[in-house]
Length: 431
Image 1 (cartoon, helix red, strand yellow):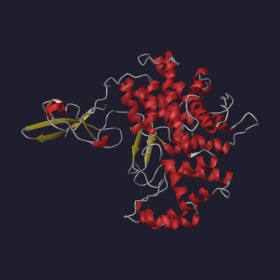
Image 2: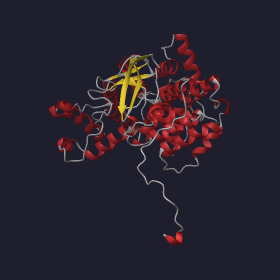
Image 3: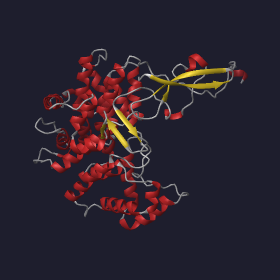
């Protein structure tokens, strides 16, 4: 926590409290209410914790009004255009960009941990063939604690390090195997000669019957998707990981909890919802009808993939993602894919419409990532698992930071109780 920079006075009834105030390196000042209950016998009511900081952090900063997303101080657009995912992983985990030697060592360690324990593969056969890949990932990641006992002691810094590398390395293998299982194809093992994104694409789309060469444009697009989703401050799934970790739970259980939270359609399902909307529109000639519906305040229809809850002016991740989407569509074409034709025309019409400019309903990262994943051939059910794969490093970085915080304590939100007051039990025959 930064040094105290002032106080805020709170008066209620016959009490007056002075609460410490702190100034962050960037962002609004913070009032410390941690002693509010002890000193004033009251606590705050903040549904969704949207006005409450549950921790201090040095990892990610977001300014939604200005369209700013920084990882350790570096703008996301610079990282996505000039860096690559594993370098961003190093930055998030260790706080600084690596030297060439540090990056080579980190990439070596990650690459040499991509294999799963062979007995874990048997877990997949326990799921129905039509199981959602996210259901599989929650189960398999949680089960890692039953296989990797040498990295579950959270009090040991080295075990925390080993667990971190293992999860970053193995998550693509877990996700790719979940995909292969749901489409009925044989599992493809990771290859040490491929980079992180190319290895994932190879495990998803290669088959034993023929050779598969990963296109560098597709690999770069996938790497950018990973990079742009690596961390996003204290969102629902990250807060879930921190809350689970605050109890002392092992790292694999904490990340499984984060995956379960991300599965919710209000969180990790945005790009899937976008593709489902495009399917509903169906054909290019129906776009004007749906744009008119989006403008009608009495119509419940909303354009998915446009605007953002956090970013009020523009999504800083969208510009780089749009560039990759254009590159992928130029490579693969959209002539035989009506869904992608609808997406491109919808983007054009929305960007040219003054209504959407006035309302700042810009295409966001979910719109473009959904287009890319659809063009690559991923089913919509795989969109959220890919999101989970990318976000794993953010979850781990936040988890490690929380454990190193001397002020860390088990999470225990309060409640505004509005139920019955004390009542006496009545015997069943008298009710």
